[in-house]
Image 1 (tube, one colour):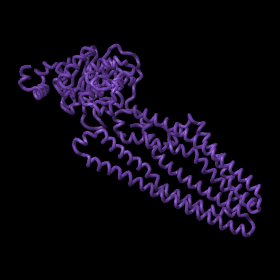
Image 2 (tube, rainbow, N blue to C red):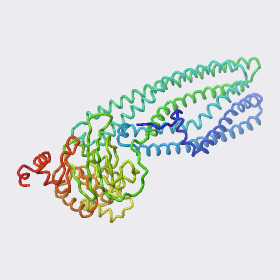
Image 3 (cartoon, rainbow, N blue to C red):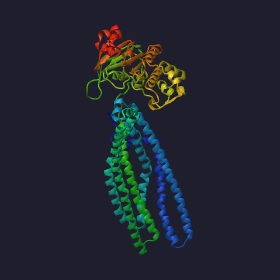
Image 4 (spheres, helix red, strand yellow):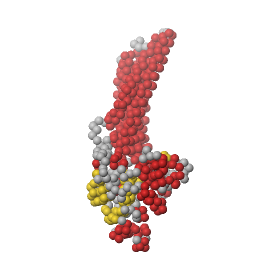
Amino acid sequence: MKPSAAGAAPPHTRLMRYLKPYWLFTLLSPLVMAGEVVFDLLQPRLMSSIVDDGVLNGNMRLILTTGLLMLLFTLIGGLCGVGGAAFGTVAAQNFGNDLRRDLFSRVMGLSLSQTDAFTTGSLVTRLTNDVTAVQDLVSMALRMFVRAPLSFAGGVVMALALNVNFGLVLAVALPVQLLVVGLLLSKASPLFGLVQKKLDKVNAVVQENVAGARMVKAYVREDYEEARFQKANDDLMQTSLRVQKLMAILNPILMIVMNFSVVAIILIGGFQVEAKAMQVGQVMAAVTYVTQILMSIMMVSMMFQSISRARASAARIREVLDTLPAIAGGEDGSVPAEKGRIVFQGVSFHYGASGRPVLEGIDLDVRPGETLAILGATGAGKTTLCNLIPRFYDPTQGEILVDGRPVRDYPLDTLRSKIAFVLQKSELFSGTIADNIRWGNPDASDQQVEAAARVAQADEFIRGFKDGYQTVIGEKGASLSGGQKQRLSIARAVLRRPEILLFDDSTSALDLGTESRLREALAREMKGTTVVMVAQRVASVIHADRIIVLENGRIAASGRHEELLQTSSIYRDIYQSQVGKEAAVHA
């Protein structure tokens, strides 16, 4: 995985470009929030006037008029606060939506090896929890980054304007608060990234067990998997507790400092009132201003918690966004003259940077309209060979050509639109049966969907359901049998009407009678389509135009069934093990 050169700016800063389309809301939120702070700062002054000039002098008219003014300022300030929160929320939600969309798009563009390296659980966490953490920071920043500094600066000015002696209290309290905040956050910051990694592990265990629930139950491994989840969950809890313990210490200490400061203000104010240098209402106003000042420091501490958490999440998001797809499409969009030809020229491939090649020295020419079968032991490289044709992976050495052009020269969409791939493990999605088949061609009519199902020998069992083609199937087709899922996957591929049709052992769950009818229907309806068929059963490939036998990643034999029985001991051994020696002799 190679990150792009995106500059040296911190990850969370580089993500701020997602706010640009919403600059108006981004601007309005802090501006309106500033209005709320201004009206909040005026309230203690008005209260001081009510106490000193109204209550102590018995001026009821002043009490009423100033009280009404306070209510008006409270209403206006509240409206400003609501407006600031609303504008900030709109900007933050749209920011999160756009970021999540681009992140998902990048994940969809990564190669299989890259998604394997990130792991499914980690990608899920990044798309959900990490994006939410950065989004929450944006929402808070648009409000608090204005409110806290203005409350702090305005409070200091207003408090000192009442009496400069109050500056002594602030000179002691502020450094203590800042020291506590800095010390605790420096210890907590590294733990936020660790929490996200622990959450990755929890998500990975959940994803594996939900996807493999049948296997877990079949082998009675519920206790083992519960213990594995419990360990991952406990690790997450312990790491989260370490963070929360540090954060739990922060607020009480800040509150203690604030309360001591209030007591000090009252003492100083008491001496000033006794000396006739101040009035009672002014002391009350000073208490409120000092409280606002110290509360703004607490707001800043909350922001730094969010910044620390969001910084770790932003780095994980940028790691995905900066990862360039390992397999990039070419730019040659011209239409080749040939249709359905596949050529392997000296192709070798291995997974990762080292290890024994899975394929080695493959030279193969599949003619248009030919049905090529691939046979071989487990691990011989059959699936890998198929995966190289649509460029799920690129060969380590050699070149693959489709219709006379190297596959690297095709735009990926153009190359893959020529191919329909029926995977070894049938992949179905939540939705109706018709929706799943229509994946092969989103514009297909109902008649075309049903015709594809008939070719795939699926129409009969589909019509057996109460809702027929509108039957809703569960995630991954959990409500269907293995054979039914395979036939729906084949129908999807048939509906695409591709130049090249790849079957990766995708008829293994079908009985021989159904497979025979499927083969006949494909030959009749898909005439001219090049078919590459990976299979374990000799009976599945016996009628192919050509069969190649893979052994240890190399082509050990090639020819028709009758030829291979005579010339290839490997093929003969496979045939005899499945069909029997007597049949091999008569054949």
